[in-house]
Structures are given as C-alpha cells and as structure tokens.
Length: 420
Image (cartoon, helix red, strand yellow):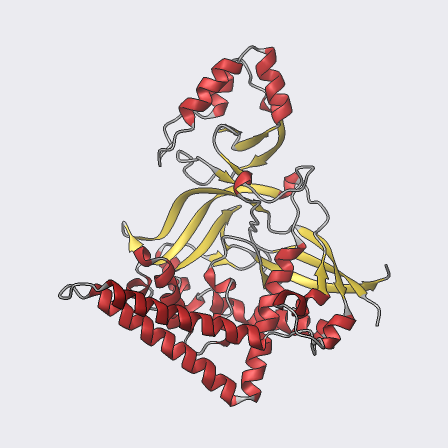
C-alpha cells in the first residue's frame, strides 16, 4: 500500500514553549529591554555591529559586555543594554533589532535577566518541530498499547506490578540505610544497593521496550530499525510570525509553602507562543512498515490516544491537589484560553515530568514510583518527604493577558487526506 498523507492542525490553547537549545538563551547583553513600553527588542547582529563600528563604540561595548557577563548567580544590578545604548545616543532600538516582543506588564521586572527563546528556523522565524508532536503522540500510543496488553494478559500486569514493587522496596531500603546516622556507611553496601535500584529501572525500561510495537523482520535488527514509529512521519510546521510570541515570567504553584506562599515567581523569563496561535503540519503514514508491526489502523490509534489524553489532562495536572492551592493564592488557572476548546495534547518544555513519562499511563502506583525516581535523580529536592499528595509537587504556570495558564496545552486535529 502506498504512503498516505494528511493535513494536521494544531491550536495553541495556553502559552507554549519549545526551546532551541543553549544557543537560544539570551543574556541581557543580547537583547534590549524598553521598560516604559514593556517591549523586548532582539538584536540584529549585523545591524548592531554596523552601529558600533560607525559610532566607534566597539571598545566601549567590549568593556560593557565584560562588566555585565559575570559568572555570578545574580546579575540583577548590572546595566541593561537599553540604558547603555541610550547613554550612547541611540533611542530608536528598532534600528538595530530583528524583531520586538511584548512582555507581560503585570509583574515585577526588576529581576529580568536571561531569556529562554522559542525555537526558530534559519530565517529567525518561530516554528513547531514535527518531532515534538511525534514524540508526544508516541508516548500516548505506547501507553495505551501497553495498557491494552495488560488488560488482555493479567500475567503482564502482574509482572509489571512486581517490577514496581521491587523498585520501591530497593529504593526505600537504600534511603533508610543512607539516612541512618548510627551506622558507618560501607561503600560496598552502598554500591550493591545502587546496583539493585538501577537493575530494577533497567528491567522496567526493558519491559516497556518489549511491549512497544515493533516491525517484524526475517532477521534480527537493531531497535531503531525495528521501531514501528518509523512508519509515522510528521513535518515541521510552516513558519509562524514573531508577532505570535510574547515573554513572561515562569511561575510554579507548589504544595510546599515558601515564605508563606504556594505560588512562586521565578527569575526565569521565557518566550512563549501566544494562546490562539495555529500551525499546520503534514502527517505521512507508511502503511507497509506499520502493517508489519501490527499497527494496521494508525489513524484510529492516534485519534483514540488524543481522545483519552483529553480526558486525562486534569488528573495529569493534579487538578484535585492544585485547584485548592490556587484558591488560597486568590488566583484561578486555565487549560485553555477558550472554555469551549479542550486540550488533547501537551507539548514542549515547561510542562513537567508527568507529561514526559509513561508512568501515569500504565502504573497503578504512580505517586510512589514517580517520587522515588525523582528522589533518585534529584536527592536535594526531597521528593520522598515533600511529595505527599502528588509528584512532582509543582504545577508550571504562565501569566498572559490577565490570566494564569497551565503551560503547553494544545488541540490537535486530523484534517483531510492530501495527494502528494
């Protein structure tokens, strides 16, 4: 059967962030903040260098950068580039910028420092990578596939439950040993306990891989060649407009109070896509490969996966735990800018651990498994002690046009088949 292609439309319902790596992070020497207008100008390097050369400011700018690009944790009191430029006779910042973005006004901007920027193409235009959508769909489809297999075969379910039980048992034993102040720690014992934990995690990963749809070949091939999802290809979106972006502070709603508050305002500023932005993609299905893996009706699988995700999103976001905390802070948060449109896909960064793992799809003990894994990865954060009702214990929010939103909420729709 020949490949078939379909148009897909993605509607951004809440602030969406997809990062472009470390090179897309801007320090305050790489952007211009106009405080009065609440606008950030992104430098056009060629125009800026021409300005410095013409005004004979190259040496003075080098001194400015050296002074304002320290390795200190706090850079808050250093001079913003806008003030340096104004002092040197430039007031029309658009003359040396590639584009400008509004920054949300209803927040204290005294700690505006580095900005994490949305991913852009070679022409400096934002876009949504097809790999982001495919990765999210892949997790949903695999989660539902394994759940279905466990329902049909109770032995599979029992085996997975035993892996979870052993992991928690080994990890709890390790934590108790490490916290026991009365015993001198034996490096060999510690190494053995860590080995047991890692073996259990490896077994859990191997189980998930063994239950993931695989392309059947006559000869044994490596996992990447046998991956059934090779048969699903999603293009990058068409370029979006820079006007579709805005900047706001990253917020955390936490079950753990700090300074008497559940809502934490981080000194981290992010360039998000605005709610209401729409993007189109091309979905191509290789039915020959998919058929060999047992995924004979991939469109039904995709539609079913996003329908189930639509129902699961409130629980994945810990709604029962975080809504009462939001009321304590006199705020409300939303999953969509339009109450009539519900999200069925969660994309990008700043969305949290729950949306990046299969645990909440296939585990009957997701709270203990999650906080144990997080405790192992980030022991200083005390997940075992503090993640009592939900894990992780924070919900990531962003403020836009007077409302707080859970980040990364989108609506995916499959449109008509297209002939290529």
